[in-house]
Length: 322
Image (cartoon, rainbow, N blue to C red; front, side, top):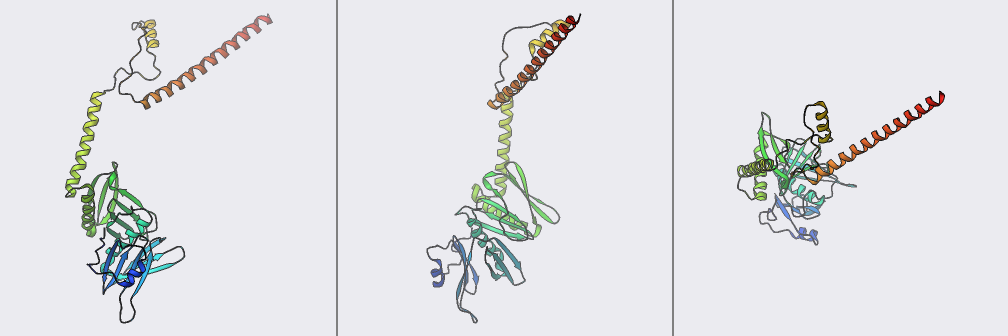
């Protein structure tokens, strides 16, 4: 998160205080030459100090944007804001681009409730058509020509079960395991280390660890513990090797074996115990299958009765013809 004292201890100019109204400055960024960006809950304020060609002034950039774009030059970067019925632009020094991007996206993502009200941005990156935001509680990913237009993916740290970095010749992939499913984010090799450091800061704070390697060890321990618990469960509740296919009537099989002379007949009335490992869902599924089988048997019995009736009528007709 960009702290509120990110202005280097500079006091807020009186003109900025007048524009704040009832709002507070949540974070700020000094741009040089006494220029200043201030973040409030609903807008970003740009303060331009007195210059040779202009007086001091404050410009408001509301956070309810439809689209945010940027164009980078050698010395300057221009941010372009598109609103429902208006457009604005903001020009900043090129070396402040990443800090300004993070500050602007912090305000916009809070306003759109992508981030929580008090959640900050650790760092934001723009790689070609990828916008990557490392926040306090999640990673936000946006792909497109615009820096932001409302279409995004969000991966919350709460659901994180693993993290790794896979380096190739041109790019490094950040591999996030979210609820056990891999999510890949490709970053250029020359910026990959910056992304890793930003993630390390955010994740160390969130999980209260001191390094990514410690966090990775914790994730692996949780996986091992889950596997061990599953193994213990299987040992405690093994599958019954005598469980027969659904619909296979032991009594019928015994009768058949007796007729064929291949085995004894056992027509005992003992009920086979239900496997202790069955869950209510298993029982419901079995009951549903039994209902289907019962309906099928009833249908077959009805067909047999119909055939019997038809045969009986045919016999009676033949006898009457004689």
